[in-house]
Length: 153
Image 1: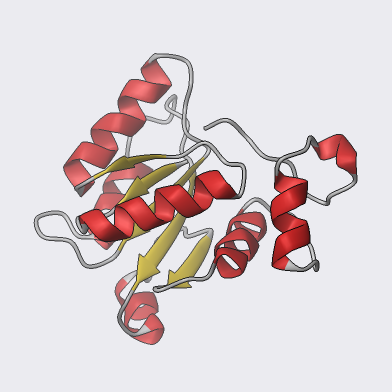
Image 2: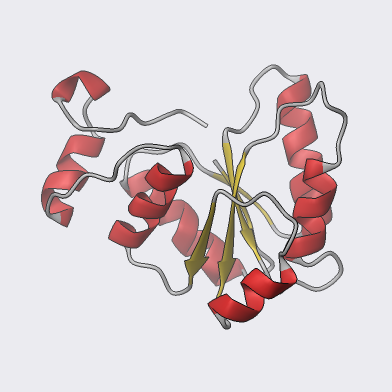
């Protein structure tokens, strides 16, 4: 997964939380850097399957970043896109009208909320287990019986 957020603390928290849940996670500090990381990963044959994009960033904000990701060449894989905001969810949805978003997440987000949002973005029903059980399950393979599987990117 790729976390695109201009705030260093938010990036660190998102990446650490994703890793604690068993996901591979990397980060980019701007929309421009995030798009470049997506393209580099695709060219290397290891595309990101999901990107978590902050809405309010200087330069390219999250909406424009996602517009550009979705407008790339059709032969490039497009990850599932989740928009994150510390502002109004309703305002974000209005600004993102016309974009294909796999999810919206309000910051700060708990590990449980992050996991549920990611699983919904992937089309899986979220596990209804305690956080402790979910974290334990995240360390095992999909064969362990959980309703989702982790990925390396």
